[in-house]
Image (cartoon, rainbow, N blue to C red):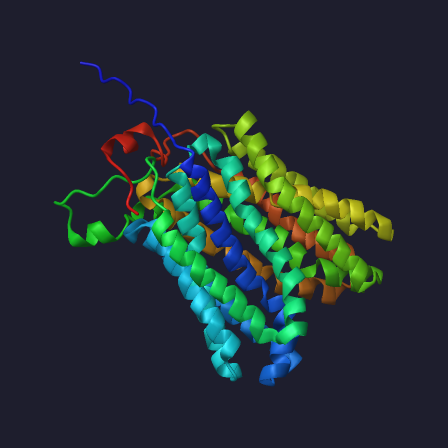
Length: 425
């Protein structure tokens, strides 16, 4: 006897509130992270830390952040994305306040590592939660909106923190944003709920270990996820290498004023914030079931644009090329993030998102050192940008190894998953 196909699941407008909540949470942790940039010099003066040693604070934060991405993904699948998201934001907020009250450099570095350890968990928790409310062919736009949080958080921190420091010292910005994070985490706990496209409840007959931990083999043995992880590492190499080095390379390589170089990066950031949801929407519209081809194309375009940027000479050309780069910089990354949940069963969506992002973030920690060494050794502006371009161009090649639509696990949000029950909170 044939089995009738499952009926489509009705999705309420509440899902847009869930997206906003996840986005705002990610924005807050992005502000927490970005506060360090404009506050660093003043923190150094307050704690008696020389300028050359301030990098230790940022390094400590990112060590915790990378670890948190992987662990946060597992927790999202094990105890639920709502609990993980609220704990992440609450813990980061408390530690921001603690950091704003510290008077010791050693303690400050330790607290920064702990801030990163809490803050990084909200990425995977947010991804997992929105995938329980939005279907796979809608994730391009949804993830694009979600990822604007990093650009907006960076802009808010740089716009507000300097004024707060001038008004009442560097500590005020950490106390303010920490307090906001705590308050919003409480709201999240009572407002958020999982959607109908998530993981079904686990059978009572399942062992205690299996009830708590996700099945890691579904992630570790996934060939497509491996290629996407490596491609994402290379994509992040190009994007965050540019964000880290663009100012210094323009100043040192072409003697552009710091103000002009900063304006180029601002234009880049604004265009990136616009492009993330726009290109995600276009991918949903024209490639609803196929992510591989647009990721390959967008990675290649960004790689070529980086090389073109490295050949520029006239100051005016940096402005319009910075805008074009902003349009394409995060395009492939947005689609890669949206691609990950479709490659694994719903039971390990958080684990897959957290694990892949942890690997991708390693690219952001390695590329500054490599590009710096290349520019120091060659003195060539073009050589530095060719090094950046190698990342997205290699990502394009790696994506060729993805076998899209051939034997992938059932993606999150399919009717079969829905019929088994509702997701964990």
